[in-house]
Length: 166
Image (cartoon, rainbow, N blue to C red; front, side, top):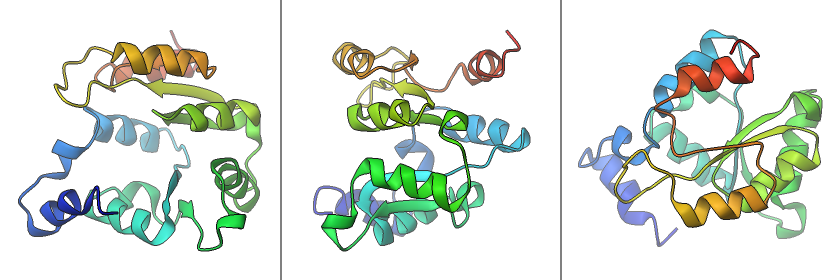
């Protein structure tokens, strides 16, 4: 939490805009997924109470509502795989229906382990160039990602591909 305290305070105070802290075109992708009736969930390794707050600060609660999952106080009851399993069980979602987006090696492996489709986001966080970060890209391919994208600016063809429309 110390590492991101400044970011959170900047959001709270209005010094930073949520759009500046999101992967480019995240909102447009979420709008499209919501339009298609996709149930959306957040799975994070951060303590759940802080994930809920960050989702609210970023204005993303309108997409995820109560479906925000994070680490629990009891460290023995937590792993990324457990968070994904909790989402699947509580919402009665079969693993093969899971479509995961993320930039973490472990998350990609966990989505694949339950039979889901993993879209890895190898974003250039510093420059927001629209080009993939080569180190992240290679690492996420190694984790078993089905697709690797640099950000969501090509969300329309991405969704069309995922839905078998292209």
